Length: 386
Image 1 (cartoon, one colour):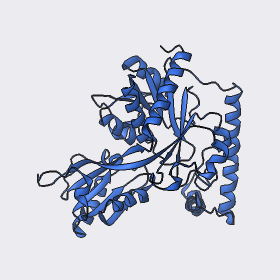
Image 2 (cartoon, one colour):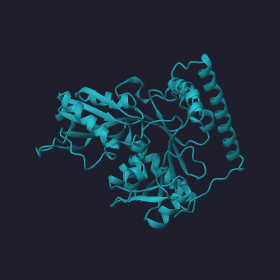
Image 3 (tube, one colour):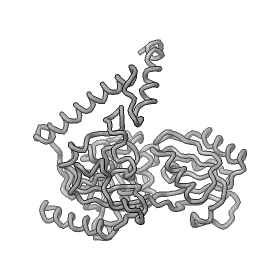
Image 4 (tube, helix red, strand yellow):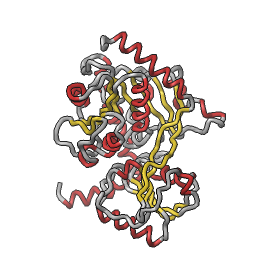
């Protein structure tokens, strides 16, 4: 397309991007009608695809081990990666050897599949593997494999690693690979976004389509346990998904790493940062949520540089961040664990830097562990895996 045509359509594209996902959804105007039409076509395609898989016309391939999928039906961050980490920990406690298989979103991997880390050593950087797979591999708790075709990635894991359970990170819509357990995540605060399909909203598919495939629900970012609604399924979901096992969780921040510029003793807990001034930078699905988390910790946010989700940082970005920290007399530069793995290790920070990670806290952790243990016994007994 020539630059003239690009310039002609750019205002329409910009307007569609601006109003996409808004709540309430604007239906008036040419851009709104365009979005409605595109969403209708997308919804029809999703239904046709689901019908073809349901009738066996499109087939799912099987791997010779249990496969557990963690996913959602709303595009964006619902906590899939922290859930994958948590689930891998449970499986290890139960005596299994899990591997997380990820698509490697925004990574530039050339081959069909590759091992990011074997649980001890990391082989691929964030640019190649994608930020979240690299972040999980860097923790050194379990192996991580990436590949757009999850069946091939799973085969690679089984061939090269000592594993016996595959966890699919963001695998609910990847029906080309059969799975034994589908865990569906919802952000408790806005479980369905604005209730519309992509691109007018954030829905990848409807509740009605996914009801028969889901085996358990996990609600993230829930109210604190002392609130009356803390253990209630949101009304937007309960009318269709009621009857499925449901678990309620919160995102708990922790201090993942500290880089001190002057060699002073590190501060190891978040409460030591209370009252300090900070410049934030983040490129995640919910940047505003990161700022809210930091402010709730009692840290004064003087500036927040927000970048798109999965953003690839340039050295000029770090210089800008550093300049803002100096200009505002900030005590700290603070970022997320997901963003930290994409920073330039050679860049010399002149302000103390703190990395905040997120872990999942279940309101009833024992109940979730029992659920996983019970399902694994059923799966292994029924599926000739062991």
